[in-house]
Image (cartoon, rainbow, N blue to C red; front, side):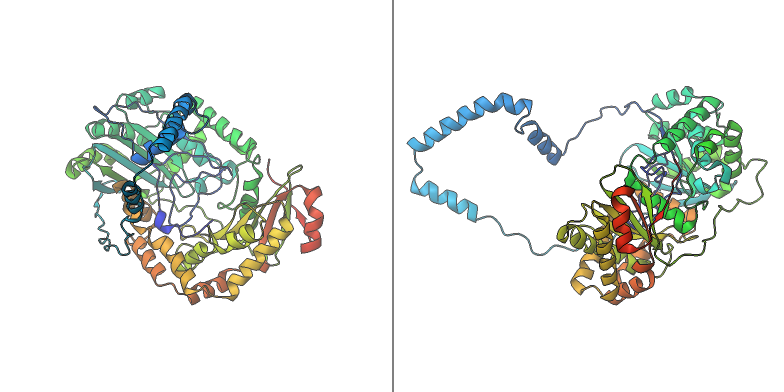
Amino acid sequence: MPCSLALRIKFCVPQLSYSRDCRPWSSYSLPRTWRASPTCSVRHTSSTVGKLPGTILSVSFSAALAAALTVLAPGSAVADAALPYQQADQTAATQEAKTTPLSQDKQSAATNSSSQLPPLPTSFPLLPEVVVQAPQEVILENGLKVFLLEDHEVPLVKATLLMRGGARASPPDKVGLATISAGVQRAGGTRQHPGSALDEALELRAASIEGGASGEAIGMGFECLTEDLEEVLGLFSEVIQEPALQQDKVAFYKAQVLNLIVHRNDNAAIIPGRELRKLVYGRDSVFARSPLAAQIAAVTAEDVADFLHAWERPDGAVFGMAGDFDGKQAITLLNKSLGKWRPHDSQPAEPPAIPTTPLPPQDSSGRLFLVDRSGQSQASIAVGEMGIDLLDPDSFALDVLGDIMNGFGGRLFDEIRSKEGLAYSVSGGWNTTPADHVGLFVAGGETAKPVEFLAALQRVLQDIRKEAPSQKVLDTAKAQTLNSFVFNFASTNTQLQRILIYSLLGLPQDYLFQYKTGIEHVTSEDVRNAALRHLHPEQQIVVVAADRDSFEAPLKQRFGKVESLSIDN
């Protein structure tokens, strides 16, 4: 929930990953906390076999030290075996110390050596300016945007293809189709390399191809050695243009998603946040809906083919490649492979717009909902309200406020956990989303005292509205973001993923630097004014997942009306 994540944009090569609340947590993560639309997802990755000749396994000193401490910790097999010898050595050393006392000179030298340590440094040289490598940008004849970043440090190549669509594009009667389609497209192989034949071809080259669906996009990516680039790019092109879409793979991924649906309420902690989104956006909104078992059971191989035909097209996609290759040669290879990709005959002349759902009228009466979790000793809580979109002018100030509220030393942590002991963890912040719709403010935690927790949470949020943060608190919060800025350029691949995401969403390529400048200019009054505009504790929706018999009566006594909320099983 902490909001200041715009500088920590990361992109895992697109894959189907499952989060606890049945949401496909990002094949990629966008500026701040863009999460995918809530739909169950599963993961497919091809296995790889080590191929690098003369590979050396390197271990850092800190890792080696940690391993040594673990092995020699009391109770470990090695420590127990060495114990008699350690005791014997200690006994001998003790006896020797008693019989041969140190001379005064040696004692003085020992004392002086501990007091002559060099002083800690108080100043440091300025870090050099961040130099961003400009990508080579090409548009193929079929409209596919290509970004290339050469990096010859190691003989590896990583590539990513993002195609507009994703979970939001799943039809209303088959929520979750995007997730299944992306998994089947990869796992089913291609017409030339069906099923396991594709896996075997990749394993022989220590390569991988992965795929998945997120809220706004379907993603496919590959990784290989430089020497295998032409072959693996050819296989990757087959997956995009000629997927086999085998029936047994459709059944496999349907079973995976159905299993996730069965268990999505096992962990009560994820229920309040999920249901809060439905209350704010609407149960059928593309930003909040959840797949139903009947919808998944009805998915067919024809549905998968129709979905891929409707949304996968070169002029609605971006492709990026980073690593050890020659740019001119790479363009030649791309023209021979992905350059032959064409939209399906059923597609319109222009890429379709991603579906969206209008925001429903918002209830500002501060309603409290209770989800019955019989036998649960603690209550899981989420409170929230409509937030901001990615490009809101207040996003910078609210990101700083998110850092002020969260973590060790944060207002929520200090007041609710440290001083009052009402929860082990508590957090809150603004989840921003792509610029075409508004995100949420969400705060919450788990507690055995939900009445006291909610009262304390509302009090802290009200105090944040009343008083601007001190300059010291402001500077500390801004430093958390600004000091981590350099890590956005830790690798060439990280930079490439950011380029692709910005291109796909239509954001300016210098948005990251605009964000840094925006954070630098935030003042204490900016934070308070943004809180006044976007933080309304008395109007927020509250969702509590707890045992009704234990907690409904005290919640009613303190907050008045408590509404029962049923959830999908």
